[in-house]
Image 1 (cartoon, rainbow, N blue to C red):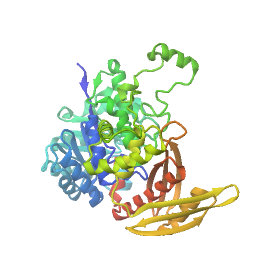
Image 2 (image 1 turned 120 degrees about the vertical axis):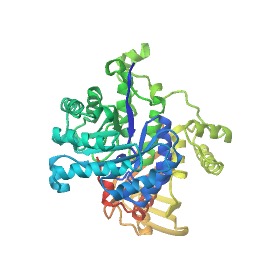
Image 3 (image 1 turned 90 degrees about the vertical axis):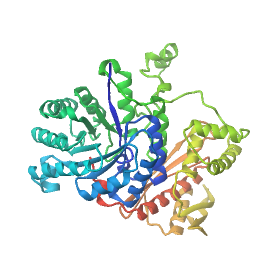
Image 4 (image 1 turned 180 degrees about the horizontal axis):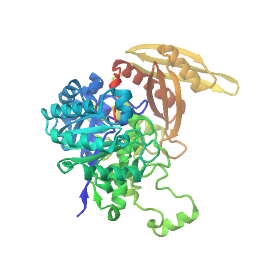
Length: 514
């Protein structure tokens, strides 16, 4: 019988620490619902001490989820733990996750604490968290660079204090697989009471080894793995949920482990994370990238046509990719449209469906066929957002080889109509300059990306921008068959996200973690 691995998803906490990937409360709730549908065992919903907005978002998630454990992160302080419990106490399965660094470099330069002080603080934090819930996790931040014997001593003490999960993080992505496997084995054999807790690992991808290190740790005896969808996260990201799950699924005879993940929800979840965060999945990304199941070389195509297993080690249908998709058009009715939304996992109100259906009809008049990605883009623009400060009402652009690029824009700023015009070196530059002048924004454009949502000459263009202002970074997304209009929507969306960040200024705790 295969042993079960606990999948602990931290997309909403560590994944959100990707630059510019902050999500609003509605987006977090939508993603948490999809993660539960995916079948993850535990969802780290956020860091309640970081901001009031984060606390409220975690509370909303805790009250809605039915099956998954809802976890809140807290530093090893009473205030953080109080706020964590305040956020998750309404959950059916709450977990408090507290942490403290155990490496010499962190203890000396960051904490300014001795080993004895760290040991004492760790135990006190776990005991305090235990007074609220029996489900307590302790993480030894920078564990992979910690003294092994001290790490085992800390783990033994916090388990004795009541920790039910102890986590060994490779916080800075420094470990290599053989080394990390041996470290896990050492912890398993030199922590006397390790049998009373689950050993977890949390790997970062700074050297591109997060998945390899996580699998090595599982092979050595760890039974919880902390992951993010699409591998997003701080710096180079985290161990990728889809890579680890599909490695365990595809090589189950070798690894002898299984998960409770519904693999057919992997691709839809990946797409949702990309849509919400604005972080595009690279085409050659394992499992969920656009090229993951694409074959261009003639010899490969010939082999796949004869037997897919010649060049595909897993079937695309297993991860939720299917060629049998219902395509909608301008003659499709409201019932078919609602059914398609349900198939895509959207549980929407009648009013939300009506709004989307009106947008759908507008797009269907411009395009012959509407596919899943088109509908997801509509949901992102119409549903998954907080009330906007800025709304694009009208755009007209004049450009060409003999014309000075000029943009005329009408915006609604806090409900009031404002109109302006401006010039630029091109139509998009003119549009951005005009919007920036009208809103008084000093945001700097860090990145501008255009992709086609679907194939065909009439495909919708999806534009992603990254904006920076006063140290805050926000991503904006927009979709439209007209690239210039999509660019304007993305820029306005990015400005709205900046306003959201300004209203919910992150405290330093938000950038602290594992």
